[in-house]
Image (cartoon, rainbow, N blue to C red; front, side, top):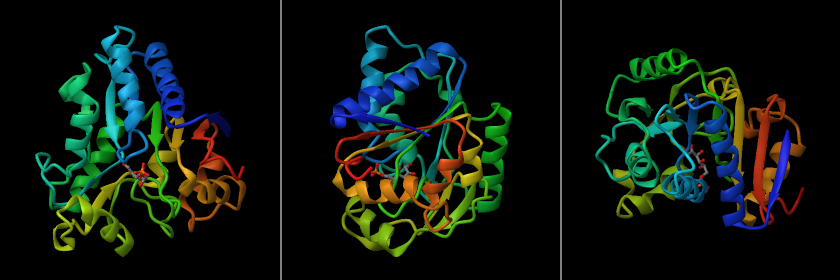
Length: 242
Ligand code: F6R
C-alpha cells in the first residue's frame, strides 16, 4: 500500500490524474476501471485538460465502470452512464464501443451481471481501477457485510444510501432506485493496480479504520490492504488521522 499526500482537492486530482495518464502512456490499449461520485470529478477534469493540450490519447483505451443503478436507462440524468458521458467521455477520444457500464436497463439481474463479468474477462481484466470510498467504507456499491469473494452482482441499496441520494431525484424517495449492479470485491481485487482518491475531513475516520485497522467484510475497503499494488491519494484533511 502506498499513500500519497496531496495538499488539497486540486492537488489530489492532479496527482491521481498523473497516475492514470502514466498508465495510458505506458500501455495505450489499457483497461481503465472508473468510478462516479464527487471525488473523481476533478481527476476527470484534469485528464480532459491534458487531452485538450494534446498530452493524452484515449483512442485505444477501454473503460469499465464500477456500478450502475438497476432500472435506470442510460438517458436518465442520474444514471452513472450519463454521469460518465458528462464528466469524461464526451470530452475525450474514447471510442464509444470501448465504453462499458453495467446495463441498468436489463431487468434480468443475473444475466446483466454475468454479461458484465464476461466483458471484463473479454477485455483482459482491469489494468487500473479508480475508486472513491463511502463514509461507511463501501467501495462500488459493496456495502458493509458483503462477501469478499463476489464478482458483479445486484445489491439492495441501504436506507441511508436511498436517503442520501434522494436529493438527486427531486427529493422524492420513491423515485430513487432500490437496487444497483456493482462489480464485487473480487472483481476489484483482480485489477492489476488500484487507485483510490479521498478528500475532505468526513473521510478521515474511515481512511484510518480501513487502512490501519483489521481487514473485515464489515469495512469493505479494508481488503485493499492485501492488494499488491494499491495507491491511496488523499488530501490533507482525509489523511489527517494517519
Ligand atoms: C462510485 C461508487 C461509490 C463512490 C463512493 C464515494 O461509482 O461506486 O462507491 O465512490 O460512494 O462517493 P463520493 O466520491 O461522492 O464521496
